[in-house]
Structures are given as C-alpha cells and as structure tokens.
Length: 353
Image (tube, rainbow, N blue to C red; front, top):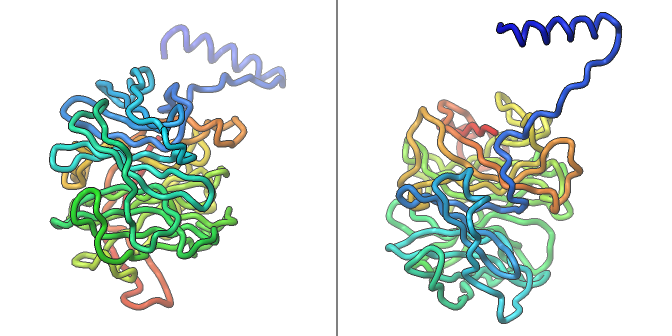
C-alpha cells in the first residue's frame, strides 16, 4: 500500500469510528460508450470495426479501429426511408460473397416486415430497399443471415399469426442473400417461467447465430420485454448432428445467461454488476461469419445495449456497451415433457460486462 492509500485508509477508519456514513463515489459504468442507442450490430473486417444503427429516419454506418471507438466515429447515413415505410428497427450488417447486406425491419404496428439493402462498400452505394418474401408473410423483426454447413439461413423474430400474442424465433432457408425458400420453421417460443417475467406480449427476439468449438450451432436471443430491466440473453443450442428445422433438436439454456435479475439466471451464471436489462447483442466476428467464431479459451468482443444501474429503465436511457464473451464447456441444458432426450451437454457461453 502506498503512502496516499495508507493515509486514505486512516482517514476512512477515523470517519467510521465516529459513526458517520462514508460516501462512495459512483464508479464509471464498465464498457459504457457515449452512444445512446439500442440494437448494436457490429462486424470486423480486417482491422476495422463496422457498426450499423437505426438513425434519423433511416440507417447509419460507423467505422473505427476498435469497438470502443465506434461511438465517436462519424455516422454516415446509407439509407433513408424515402417511401415512408414507418419505424425502422434493428438493422443487421453481414457480408456474403464479398458484398455487404443490411437487413432491417420497417413498418407501423402489425405492418413490420423485413427488408434488405446491399453494397460493395460498407458505408456508401447501397441499393434501394427490397422486402424479403419470408414464408408465412407475417410480422417480422430482428432478422439476420448466416451460413451453417454450407446452407444459408435467415433467422428472425415474428408472430405465428396476425396478432401480437407472443414473439417466436423462426428459421428459413435462403437460396441467396435476398431469397427465402421453402417453409419457415419455429425453433423457440417464450414458454419458460424465466422468460415470462415480463410480457404482454412474451418475447423471444434479436436472435444471433454463432458456432461453438465443437461445430454446433447456437442461436443466442433476448427474452422478456425490452421495455423492462428483466431483458436478458439466453441460448438455443442445436444438438450435435441435429436438424436446424426440427424444433426438438434445439436445447434451451435453463435461465438467462446475461441479465440483471439473479432470480432468472441459469445456475452458475451471475447477474450483472453495472447495468440493467442487457440484451440485443452482437458477437463481433470477423466478416460477421460464424465460420470465424472463436475457439475455446480466450474472451472475444461483444456489444450489447443496456441501461446503467441507478438510471430509470426506459428505451430512451439505453446505451451501447462493449463487453466480452467466452465459451463455457461441459454445460447441460435440461428439458421435460417434450420428444427426444431430456438433457444435452455441450458448450454454453459466459458473458462479461
């Protein structure tokens, strides 16, 4: 202990001895950026980090040398809602065949559908928007493209019908980055108690694909209402050799893996210390490709939105945060009263503020 710290300890001990309370300065919020926004989507291309967000009635792209520097980078508007489609939500940027694609939801109320724009450059030259003809033709948000075992897939959050009862996670095959093919397949519904703490409707949304060190597919999603501090991240793990279109080949984590409510966390996972309601995350992968998913061991970059503790929870108070994640092996997910084995053991994910 240096002299300054020793003197501080003596002074604090003297104050405590008098019975007076000791004020504690509020610590800086870990990982908080200056960007007051929601739904980060970030990829790395070489040494450049590229983010996309809904802004100014359209979509803006930022580029920086690190995730921490994104908030201070110039936001370049790449698309504007010139056709007055409505609310523009949760754009996602990916690369496919050397071309950039940004997927986003636009509409009002029950009219929300998925759209895409594309370009050969990350921050300019994008095409006009094109609506994706997702099977079922229902309300759809938070969509993203990924490739697994040589097949393109599109994953999104949507309704079973035409009313807002609950938001489910769906998959569809894609014949190219803009063309869904075949049926839609449901892979998750918000039916567990820990993901029904806040509802009306109950929520599974913001799905993000990643591949674990064993080659198994995961879809990490946000559960509980985004308007509450119960918002959290949970995991769907496809069993080894499983069929992505068969719902019972997916095993769900037994609680939140990243959240601020200790009561809803999966056993062995701790609640956050500095933020409330973390969710709608982005695994920061090279080229946004799940084939570049990290190996077991080290931590890798993550971005998510949350509200700093001590601040009223509201959409307006959400910030982008930088964090990290790592694979957590030998983790068993359990289920009951459904077809197939009741347990599945493999990699899960630890998240860090």
